[in-house]
Image (cartoon, rainbow, N blue to C red):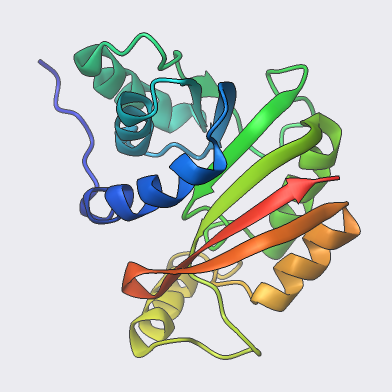
Length: 198
């Protein structure tokens, strides 16, 4: 069997994330995952949340790895991954009932984060829940030394990447009609934001 991609971070955070999102996505619905990466999260969440249809998406270079995970797991509620870049003018859907994304905003440039939220206003259905996992700065400051080092590493890889300020994200989201329902502390100095469309 071809070698599947693997992320230790996904293994570490999948259960803590699951405990939160199972309380948010508690009704049968289709959850779109933006930036599914290796596919580990998609498989884990689909397996443990059988009332959901899970739709993984990512840029084209990651689709093959997600397919390998999906083919091995053989989960009826895990859909075939779709190619999607948040900057695409048209997303491969008519509407989105619920959305999850993990460790993506700090990879995106500031402009692309704006585009991401703009696209959500186009595609998210009314009252749709949004769960966003990852590190954030508060009051313009890192919440840990490890996040500071991580941010420096991100910027060394791509100068436009980096950990975003929570205040900027909330201003951006509220201006698009999304309300913050919860900001939950997670292991390894991460957060999980729960938002809802108006």
